[in-house]
Image (cartoon, rainbow, N blue to C red; front, side, top):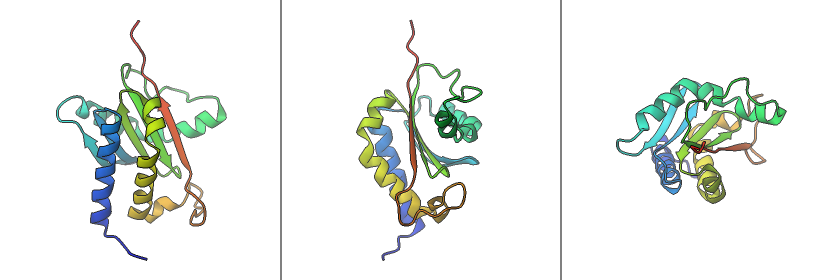
Length: 158
């Protein structure tokens, strides 16, 4: 097995994140943990500072979305309230690390980014071995990692 350096893997993660942002015609994309942002790709100028603030403020709450959606109860409070006009694609790897893309059309990006997400997940699992385990500490070395993908559409002005 060939081992890649963290630096090289980090460059690959950053490149794939940039490709995801560009494919979604978006202003911002990031890899994050509940505690903070790890990697980001931002369009020059624009709303990247606001989106970075959104993710820092609400990142931890976003990790509860897959569980709330599985329960069909929905979250107690909408973490996207006040972000009308934005669409978001979220992906969570084993409930440990998240990928967020602020994009033009989250459903279209979800349908078109399977190859990018697969490559990004592969690099993330190589970058930090802790992310290979799920929230209960079970290993996923034989099977595929759990990937929860959520497309949040934007509200259209009436």
